[in-house]
Image (cartoon, rainbow, N blue to C red; front, side, top):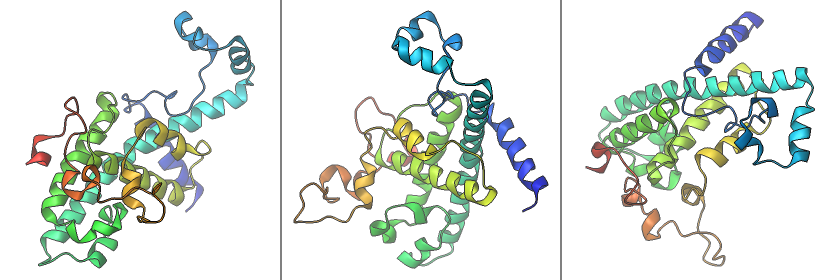
Length: 235
């Protein structure tokens, strides 16, 4: 890749950052400057913390803002790529008589899902997952809401996987440990990591993925009565 190509994607992502209105830069890890806070917001911090924030050199502050804006644009851009790639996976599955784990392993998005259930990722599942993923990515613009079911949590993980792919391709200058920061916001108290863990009968600390609330048939079921899952995904 030449320098012009890298500049092109960076400018595109910075423009996309303006579209990601569902998450603030602060939620993505940017420490706010005390001068940008309301009086009520400043009350949430100790005086020492406010002084430390204010003491950050202007050049360092500008770099942090630029990196976080780039991350915001990356998430927006990756959401479109994610849905496009899911349609591609769906097209591939529609042409198969039966789905095998090797088919899923070579897919664009479904390969990011828990491999133990690969044989269940057929066209019907993919259509439902695509609808949930579309709803999740819409939250990036309308206002973020926590995933309402296991499938939605997995869609977030797929989104972040796609963002990491783009980061690697273009060697983007992003905040350090950005994925950890974003996961703490978007996947707080998530149940889905257990789906990637092999159960160990000798270690009760490792969850059993056959537990009722983690069973494959429950992936599209709302966590609570207040959580909303698109009707198509629940059909």
